[in-house]
Image (tube, rainbow, N blue to C red):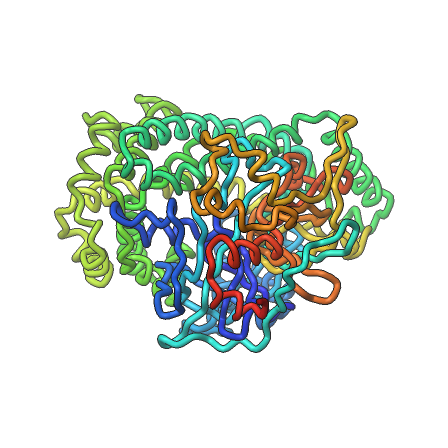
Length: 637
């Protein structure tokens, strides 16, 4: 199972389903690739990508696929490195030893990726080694309307009628990768009650956070980010209404904003639920009481819960400048991100390796950065201008015009005027320009007359002080306190509680099962016939044209989507859903609205994984898209 499970650099999961490197994932995991392959004349997002032969498959720019090969415990090495240190020294020591472990294991071999991963909020550390594939090609993607039928209203809801599936293929040295260790495709429908397993990479959960940390998320961090997402969503919708090309280039960004908005909306609901937070308080009190009852353990652990309560005052003070000037700097502008990466690589490269920012300290990281800069994916200057202007305007609003950093950012210009000057005047849309600046080092960067480069040279340092303060007053004390809470958990519970998600491989177990809520029973499966019954002809409930034409050919009794009790989170998108015989019967693509609180805790009565069935994908390949070569490869008629 492990050898056929795939982690994608797009932040999703996938699985190998044939001996010729064919990989099953979700459409929403590859929509960026589909958009990158599209242009004004060929909109593959709207029309689908359906090559009739393998030779027509095209590479997804920047996408990498990884298969886990080895796990090694490195807890003692990492914990020893930070022992006795405080603040920034603690963070730097941990980063340095992790980097050294990774480089020793993988070196400069670009066919392998090594990552030291923290578990239990610093209680355990492991080195994960992956086989890396950098030539990943798109083999099939349905129309966006087929994959995302129901749009944002149906997102994180159920029933669903979405063909959220796509196929990639692994290549190496220009040749298809042979993958004899693959999962078997089962085109039969799932049955209610049958056991199912999900092998994927859940991205991030916060189930081991203390009550004080959860309260800060509820009261500060989530509300701030949601306010900005809400306004940005409106701006993107208005941008798309300017014309077909604007709608096309904004689609992926808008999809991401809407998806994140609804996900955090669900998290906020969970944190606002008095019963939920009451349970969290009871669990925390139980652990603290168990520690207090053991004098030796209490002496070793101390009171990290109170320490984390104190840290939250620093979070409240530092969050806005850290977010606006460092962690979310640029607001998603691709051109700004290129410029900052180039400038920081040049400035950090002039320092000894031990003094660099961690992301610029390893040769592997710099190689991957150069590969990203050399990527020829088109960039929409018009969309970039919107994103950059929005970030600048929100930074001015949140930090105020009297803030010295805001004055340095804007000078005498308006956010909109500055964004227009930078986005329309930069030459960083050309990958040759980007790589030349990167290769030329600090001298070439400082000599550049590119307005975006000059802007970042003048302003990127604004984020360094908030970052240093955040690491000194938030990251380091949080890490040290969380480490001792993890030790307390191990002493009291052992390893019976599984760690928070870290975008590393997990196996979740469950069953195909509906749920009941407020007197309503929700069945576990939907059927293709329901798609046609639900269609209204108006967005987002309009049928994709091929599905409208195929209404008389497809089997309306085919199971389309289904739900199960598996415990998943973002990052699991694209994970194979596997039956008891180890066969693929679906691909997880969503959760129900109740599952959004799964970031903080799992409720087996209500939380459900939503998956597209292999039965529906098979029916679509056979009678909607008519792609016999893929059916043959999957081993079905």
